[in-house]
Image (cartoon, rainbow, N blue to C red):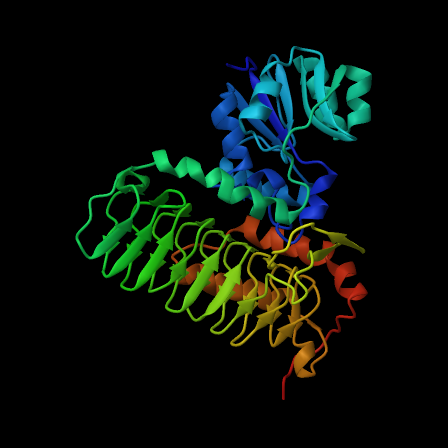
Length: 424
């Protein structure tokens, strides 16, 4: 079934704030769910003639740089589908959206999911930046639809293992030496090009497929269980990758590392001993040796996570941590269940509370939470980029500058002080 629209406009609504710290540096539609971003799922299935994006103003330069698409100041052509970037375009969602005619909308409660209109109406909606169900009711025939929508960060962790089954058709069936032991249907072990193996290695596809992308290297004594996706150029060094994992491009997962049901985005390193489970880790994060995240309470009760000022019961027994982009954990860091670590922050010791962005955090070691200066954050980012052959652009600098300003209130509310950080 096809969906005939000339322009696809993917927008972010106010729901982005419930997805912090993952959505400080990106729109919700840029989040990986399964083995693709929500935006990739939408564009691949809808196949529009043109795609445009609407995001927070401070994100615009970086989003434009990433995709080369029109962002915010956009021109639409012909019939236009306005799609909420938090919608997971699985078979059910695609079927419902494909049935929309011009002048119809789908909502879920008070959340606008999708609106199909002509270009004139679309221009007005985009110009006003009001993407709400009540607006749709004044413009279109509205239908309630129970589509999959990402509301909280743990939704991504729950959905990813279910969607990873799709990696079973990627690449080509593996052809490997006897040093690589495959448990299960060999056809479920898929490879890109130029993948190196340094055995002995175990690939277990009895629970789902494993895909290892172009240019990866898997070193001896690694075990990878499906369903799992390993992105381009990543190195697995004697690690235990349990089922339900997405590991992005150019990552390093080292000896003694254990991952389970976890998303690790591009350029993130976990080179050393420690468990990260049922968690979501941003880009350019460095996880120090001996860092562990708890994902299960001693009481076996459901995990609660603080969203804004409210503690929300996830309804799940296992929820790990959510680490924002450019964050760092020091040696021996221990992160308790359901904790969120903000972008650019550095954490030490026991993490018993959520950590605001741009914060040096070592409360358990007796140091007050201290603001990381913008200058220090940018210099560290520049050094990290240079180590991977990436240039820091003006858009990177502008994004960090904007984030430093918009997150100041979070630091104030958490009692973060200004000054020199010291553990002495």
